[in-house]
Image 1 (cartoon, one colour):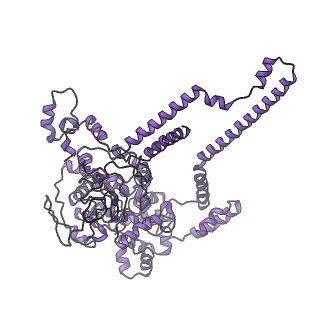
Image 2 (cartoon, rainbow over the protein chains, first blue to last red):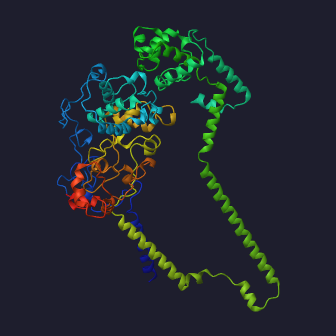
Image 3 (cartoon, chains in turn cyan, orange):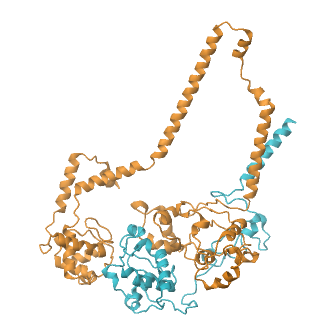
Length: 208
Length: 420
């Protein structure tokens, strides 16, 4: 009688502890309900399970690999995507061609004209983009006094004499390819958005 | 490192201060080019030129991206300085020995040309460089040392105080307990010496019986009820947390701190998570985005050398190997979520779902990401239809209703919005 009682109490405690362990926190992802739904069969962005045995315990796959394994063994580093073949041109709505000039071809770049017509809306978008991508270093008013800029040092004061008369194509090229201590931002900002930033810099920042 | 340590270690008595003063003064005396005038007007005008064009790369008395400027007309002629400022590349290309050495010393960093500066500007600038904002070296050293002390005293103390207070409290309570015990024993002894009748004697000498208390009905009922309530609560909480990964905060391959980057440095989320306004995923930045800053920033808090965490970015870039970040937020395959629809179209702040990300050292899943959580927001969120033609007809159709136009009214509760 006594043993049965103790066992039942212990059982309840163990059950409680087990359920408490389902909760996620720290490195514990928590218990998944129907794990097959959480682990995509198709390739998914930002998720690559490289380990072929992961999820072996519920696997029904014909190739004998774990249920959760989903990465492309034929790509470098098992990545899901490949970089586009060199020299190919992505099609886009605006019909803009890629900016092919090399970093040092600043003088050629300076001749390019801004294809985005200047409107109030473009300036507004330019402001948002400037705040997202530029303010950290160049500061709210473009004077090279952003919080990150203070750490990196040598950030251009966009309102300074050396920069105030630069052509729009030059600014576009520097955002795309980088110059001096500034890195290339071509991979982060689409060409249209870069031209919008150029408008904002020319029309608002440099006309203060 | 060694020299730094010994500098801080030197006690600031009068002697060291005096020695420091004369030592620094000795190096600070320049025979500036006589062409450079020392007038308040020129210095003030030069300062504004300096702030607009030079300050991000140069300081007067310290090396930065470029050399410390004070004394330039002592080291070279004023004419040389002017031509270097106007077009440094030309001076270097002309084979000037000093310029070439300088260029090499500062890692071949090109200084932009400043041909737009007039001769007056340049004269004023040189006046400011030679005579402007002079710092008394002894005072500077004293404030620097004092500043460090103050900073050291500022951090960490509250928690230490707290521990001390708790320890003192515990000691005091223990002392009170001992004193009370002593008083009881003394009183008992004293009473036992008196003449007492039987009832009183029994009362005084009664013992506290633990066993009896444990077996009493009241106690058993209270304890049983408590245990059942506790187990039931754990069980229900546990069952509800199945499939909900709220609080998941995995260790990442690089100890990247959002608190530092997004919090202290105020870098916008979109700078790194570039996909958030144009695609389904917000994107984890590729190392080339890290390198925009970390080419130059190699350690935290101005420490020397390369931080081991930042070194991991360099390794990834050098070996062309991806950094395998651990995914934190994961929706089951049966539900579709799109970042751009919420951030770009809906104009929702990142923090609405991701919580105070700018305060997190390690990212954790802030929201439950359950269907109830999604639906709740769709029921309560109003639509900003201002200046957006897309909503015109919907607004018209909705105009009979008393409530504002919400996400639920334009299909935010339809199954096939997210499940298809």
